[in-house]
Image (cartoon, one colour):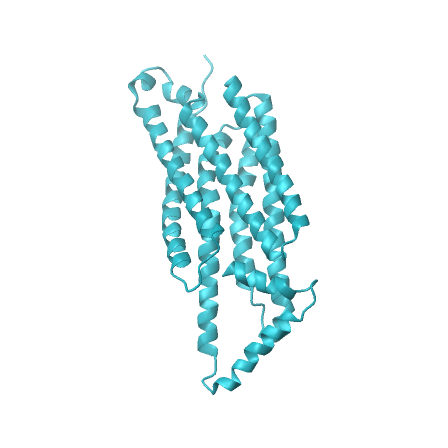
Length: 311
């Protein structure tokens, strides 16, 4: 008799890690909602709606993971069969199918959010946005195709599904790295163009935040790709964790950027001289006018667009 892989242990480990990250997401979601809806200026509707969508997907996925665990390890019809839990977890069920669909939906929402940020930061550059959207369409199409093959032929580990999954992960890496690098570079460039006025790169903290958040999600994709290429079943189970990481990334991004902006504003307020207003106002006006007179290829309106999206 061929020994079955320890899928039950892999699933328990993935479910445990997913629950931990989901707890972090709950805290970050509360922080983001407080930040977004307790400010003088209302945020763009895309940001709060995206945060709510990601959190809802993560919540539903975590609930389905719990229900699937109960079926696999407590259902009498399953555990009465030798290696019944392993066989159940390897079998395509409505629960596993729904969880895979939530993963695809969550990653699509995350990549579209990052592409939208890239589009705004690069001064509404349609060429960049179209390229990224084409890549994202290819990534989501291969993921949905793998999902459809599994649904039609009930073969989770077929060669076709394996090839489509590798293609989807590869394109996802390209999209994530390109968008993160593009946003970080634009912010760094905007800060450098006005550093002679401010005395420092005003967006250095934002650049680090985008790189860190992008690195978290990129690292998870690299791990999934490595496990998938090696043919390990752990790659299938690790998707459960990646759903929560795909939710963690935008929530952490919003919370970190808002914290950095608040800290910068507080620092500006405390560092402002207490002299007459006419000694302070001209400096602010001059900085604004100097930024507005930069040519298009340096900062021009992109500085203001960058500032508005961070706000």
